[in-house]
Image (cartoon, rainbow, N blue to C red):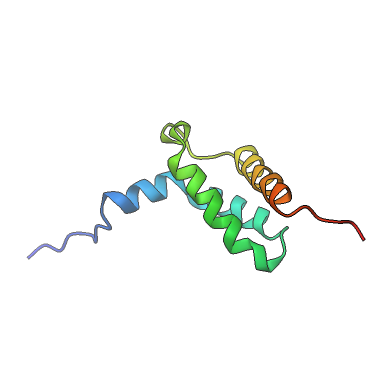
Length: 86
């Protein structure tokens, strides 16, 4: 009997294509710039934006793309709850 390599399926292949290790590393580095309490939220929002944006069907997000998404979410949060400098 010949054993075949384990296959994680097409969903995992798509995930690994869109989020290769270097892109995951870039996202992690960006998230480390944020307070720990916000990292999970930003990670989920960026993941949502990337997985639903048709331009990422052709290529994974670049460092610039990830930073732009992070900044857009920060601006959105500032509009919802503006900080009042002390």
